[in-house]
Image (cartoon, rainbow, N blue to C red; front, side):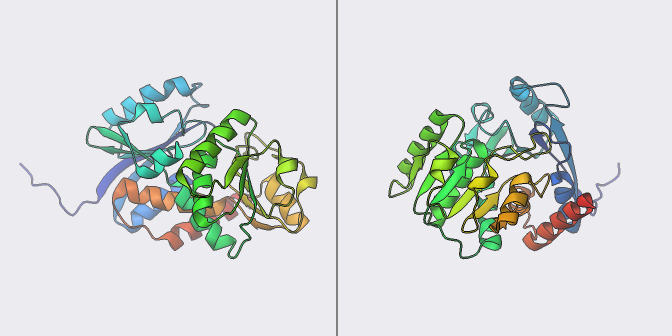
Length: 293
């Protein structure tokens, strides 16, 4: 019998569950950072659209991931809230936000985490230092929007107006936010036009602008040079909103910073290693530049 080769690099299997994710750069980000740590990591895309499946496939996917020995899964649109009832536990952040973007398989347990909030906060502070936080409009009260809303109030936003196509969802999120954060600073808005009156900033957290859902999430005429804009969509990096905001003279944080920030934190959860944040951010920017080229 041969002794095990303890010098061989550790192997890890992780993945991403979502719809329309074939152009995701997350696999390259994780696999490259793993190489820097002497880790062999394979990152598998599990695309509901490509498989002709919907949310009903989630229980089967999670069970299969357990059986196949996945260390963890990233979770994206439209699964961040639907996955919660299928898990064995939640981190404090994921529980407070009501959304999961990372699942860690810990023995026989599947634990949900959320790195969207920490990823967005890092990107915001990096890309928009000194931004006016007096009145901020958040478009989108889904999984990403919920996480970012908590992060925004934690940063010190004095008034957060939440607008969603589902008014009841926006109202429910504001109720949840006000139960957690002091000052009752969150309230639902009727529409983007009325919400943006007197606003200092705009956070976009809907899928509009993605390759599969191109377009603007609001009329470009509502933008003005005194408004900063934070985008969450990063494929493509130059979304219609990013282009319109820059053309108007707004300070803009594109979705690349948040994508890198949440990937850094997810990598740490999956591997137990300390990733190099600057290296992963620079790698993502190179990947995005190459794609545009």
